[in-house]
Length: 151
Image (tube, rainbow, N blue to C red):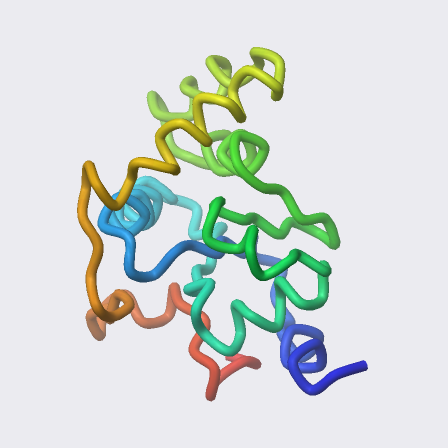
């Protein structure tokens, strides 16, 4: 087992893990939305670009050329991506946002095509930063920081 994979294995939490593109404005806005509406504090977040995010994607053997193409969610031992990840996340949101999960019960082939269409254009439409999201002191406990994996 590589050092990167071991980092992910050290993560001990019953929380749903959300991996996102840390330089994407749309992704950052989505994370802020999720935090605001995760009233039961069920989710933890990490950037795909962080050492922790890389270790998770290495553990699940996600090819490097596919890593920035999706939000990823780990629940239990299972990894979800694209619209499957959003199904999991929307089910955890407070009312009325949890009702949005039902729009995603269309076939994954269709919802993933819509996801990919937006994903390919997200930097052009919403912009991109030169650095990853830095959470405020108030939100730091929601994020997995490489140096504090067992918090």
